[in-house]
Image 1 (cartoon, helix red, strand yellow):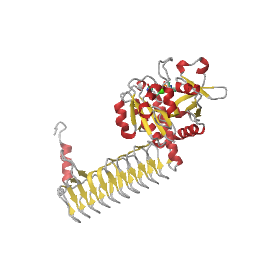
Image 2 (cartoon, protein in one colour):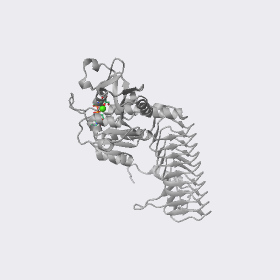
Image 3 (cartoon, helix red, strand yellow):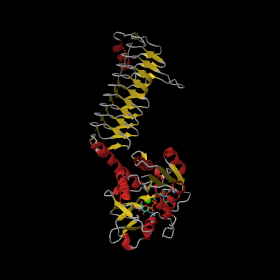
Image 4 (tube, protein in one colour):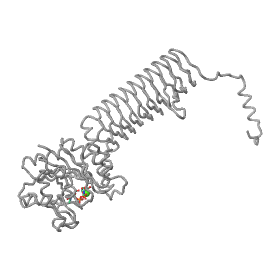
Length: 465
Ligand code: UD1
Ligand code: CA
């Protein structure tokens, strides 16, 4: 059966008190509306329509060609919002989900269950409901003596008896598409808020003799709608827990889940261990048998099997098999470490490739460079890649040895197997297997230290330099 999806995202979100449009606020690193559209992707929806109003352009920029859009110029209620999709969708056959752009915790399995119920009972509508402790502000589910759904009443329109009902409308529905749009035509705004309520479609369908179904989810967190930053943090906490749990069940050890933050699209191999303070973001992919953390922040990076990364920050970097990074390393965009590379403490790598087995163990900067295999970059050695106007490239051949505190003034090439003496400032290319020295010769003056000390000691106190 054909499935379509409508996402309501036209509301202003005043209570967020934000310059950022509500549905673009991220939960676990991804804008809320992105999570909702992901769900529609997983359901294999034929057509996806996002109803936009306030902030329309920003939402369109973010979603791009992933969905179609309908504009709701004035926010006259949820029923009116869905009606804006009629032009695009009204003539289609099949089932249509209505989801909210600010309700990102809905689970795919609940939506699948709703599809199953719609088919099994030939229902014109299936409502996702939940039982909650505090139903404040939400629509209440009305059932008849047989337990069948008869309608949904908004809190502001409730009698005291109805207000006591704790089964609430999450606002998520699966409708027969044709019947949805036919019923919407009959919705009026005769209610306490003067809005066109989508919820009225339920009683309209019921009165027309249609079958309605309810799926009451056992997990009421699914229905969390984000209206303010308090709810945003609740949504964040629930999703974080779900993501961590998924990885643990897939064989990833997380020593302290409360102190581990993994964004929705991160992939992690089994037997990898995450230590406290680990933050994994964006399109990061981590292999098997890695140890990540403590206190490590990785964004949009690829980490191969067996790598170890501690107390470090990585952005758009790639780390080879069994490489070690940190403590206190900073891998910036374009850092590519080969197998068994070692990047040690206080090292920054940017737009540079390091071949297998190379070591940059302490206090270095390597930028705009191609470093071969088994190269040793000594403590404090740096590439001087920037002349104030342009960036220049450094190339270092396999098995070269760059001594401590060497400056490689780019553009410059160090040949294979070359040896650059500690403290050198290299401005010219070094041939393969050559030794380069570029520093002052040392001269020692016997006995001078004692003489100097005596002179300094006898100097009158007020004699300033
Ligand atoms: C709605 C339901 C209520 C349910 C609750 C769950 C109605 C009448 N009530 O309440 O039964 O318990 O959701 O959260 O449907 N929107 C538009 N255009 C509009 C109005 C709303 O796009 O004109 C969007 C909002 O951006 C939001 C969603 O629809 O994403 C829900 O709107 P909101 O005002 O929060 O719904 P409620 O009245 O709280
Ligand atoms: Ca709401």
